[in-house]
Length: 192
Image (tube, rainbow, N blue to C red; front, side, top):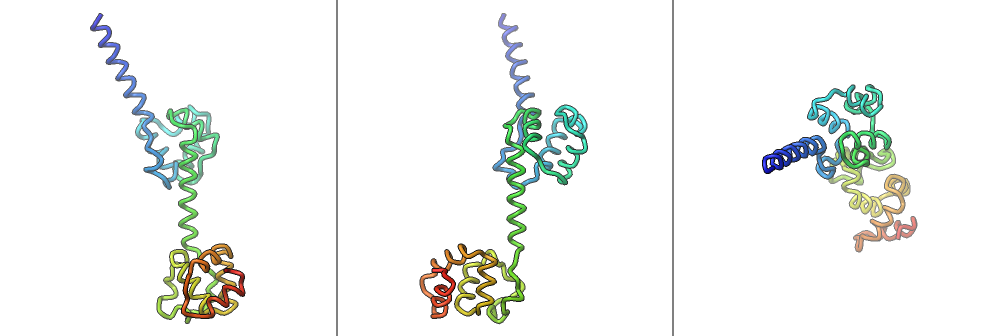
């Protein structure tokens, strides 16, 4: 009897390890911003299956799975549920990966944005390399400088680029400016 119980426990633990090993996808917090195709490709290799086998198992075209693995396509909610059922994880796991990836991609895209530089005189930024200004990282200093020394065209360009709400919030946070033009411009453009 004891041998039967031990054998049963052994097989139970073995089955548990096999199942949990298959379902051990990385935690989203550790891989946030990574394309879900990378994780899907990794899991396919780890589980020793082919993408065509996965596609057939979940009722998708193999080209769809291939496009996702090659990061040419994203995950939709229906596919996220199918993959979650196959890999024994939460239904929104792959959708959360997709959302994290898209947010990271948008942040990178936004960090490369610049205002229309034809509307801003380089002389305003005499103390720095104009071409190397990080317009998002240094927005407080840029807004302050433009409101202190800029003309109407430059102020309008900064408001258009950052948005009136952002410029207003930053203008209100600047307690003291050495230039009276800062206060005048902030009031003229309804920023404070």
